[in-house]
Image 1 (cartoon, helix red, strand yellow):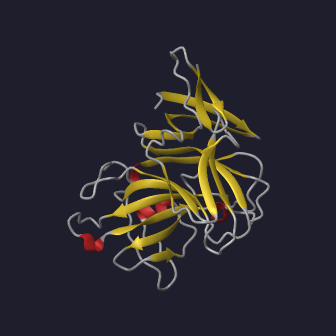
Image 2 (tube, one colour):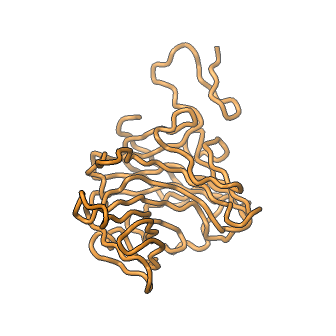
Image 3 (cartoon, rainbow, N blue to C red):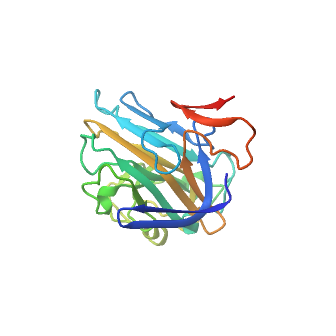
Length: 275
């Protein structure tokens, strides 16, 4: 982990300048990140094919050989305990910044609006921590098509602040059942301050400022059809000013400011020491 830093990137006409705790994620040190839900016609890995800054980024690739098999996620769940909340201050009400960089390669032949989605894993105890029957668990999901991005730009990095954007909900557990809440124009503030409803028969949940955020997930598929190639980097998740992390995906760790006589360099996809 690096101390507070500042990165400024000029992409087209947009400038991003921000302070954060940079956490370098490499294939040899994933910092808790992991691939998940990877099916037969998809892959996700950190490589050097399309770096944003540094030498790497997170690559997603899918094809459609078998319908429904074009899915892959990369996730960080900081909640590990079974009977207590590990980070009680990481709640929807404390979320202050959500941002990530994404890249859709022009070789992609799937629908033009599709890029990796950004998901928040939520857990709400219904105000009764010892009563599991009223718990709600699921994902709040950001997708570009519901936020005015259609088609998505190709062959250029896009840095997107999604803090005030729309997130739809997939509910895996609640007193009213599971499934998608079919309402795609709901912000995180709406989820905190109201009870957005979907269509008749959809689950009904009541989230609040106290709803816990247990982790984040970046993913592609399924059912996208044809081929997709894209990349993600600079995933920033902040809860107030003292819990602000930016995850930087790299193939090799940044050399120490006081390195030993060996020099680390990049060779293929491996970090190798020059002796």
